[in-house]
Image (tube, rainbow, N blue to C red; front, top):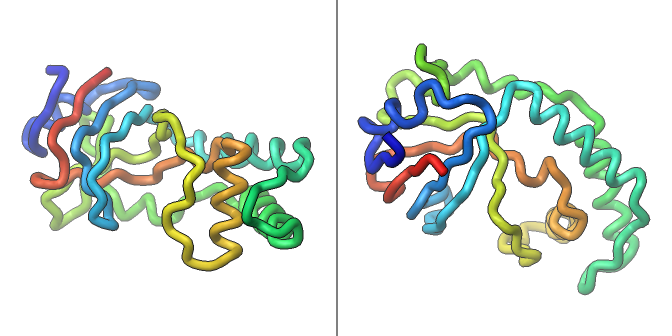
Length: 172
C-alpha cells in the first residue's frame, strides 16, 4: 500500500516503514486551521539532538546575517536565545505520552482516535516569510532560523493525523 486516505488505512502504510522514509501528506489541516501539503522524512530517536547540535555549530560558525526589518541588537538577542536553547537538553520528556504501535512507524495516544507520526523532518522548500509574529524576539528567532536554514527549524515532533484533517498520506 502506497496511499492512505483515513486513519484505518494508516497502520498498513506507516507500519514497519524504516527510519528515513519520505511521506507526502496532502490537505493537512494544522493546529491553526491552515490547510497545506507537507513532505516529511521520518527520523530516529537521536535526530533532534543531532539537528540541535548542527544548528548550534552553524550559529557559532556563521557571521550574524543582516535580515531586513530586524535591528542588529534584536538579531543578536535572538541568536543568543537560539544558541542557549540549542545547547540545552535534547530530551523531549513528553514522548512518553505516546504509545508506540507494535508495527512501528507511528504512535497513538490512549483515548484518542488519531495516529501520530513522531520525529520527522520537514523536507519541503522553505519560505522566508514569517507567518506568526507573536513578539519581536520570536519573529527575529524565526527569521534567523529561516535565513540560516537551521536544521532544528525543520524538526517536527509530532504530526497528528485525524480523519477529516488530511486528504491523503503517500509513501514517496
